[in-house]
Image (cartoon, rainbow, N blue to C red; front, side):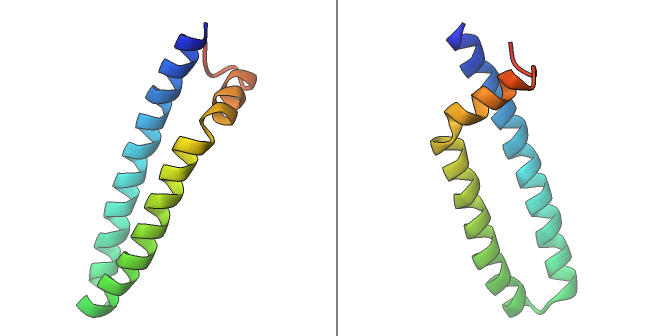
Amino acid sequence: SPREDVAYYFRFMTVVWTCYFFVKAAAYAWLASRYTLEEAIAIRTVAGTTTFYALLGISMFLARPIILVLKRLRLSP
């Protein structure tokens, strides 16, 4: 049923967002060890904002195609 698909999509996106934040934290830690504070903040501001809004847009505007792909790959009920 469509509700099962939507519920699975939200569980899937929760995993995607969790992975995103862990990778982002690791990237920020690496930036802090590699660059000066000013450089790291500048890179974080651009890269962090860009990737956040990109994933947010994908989550919101591409939900239906993602649900269909998950069904086609037999990953969702």
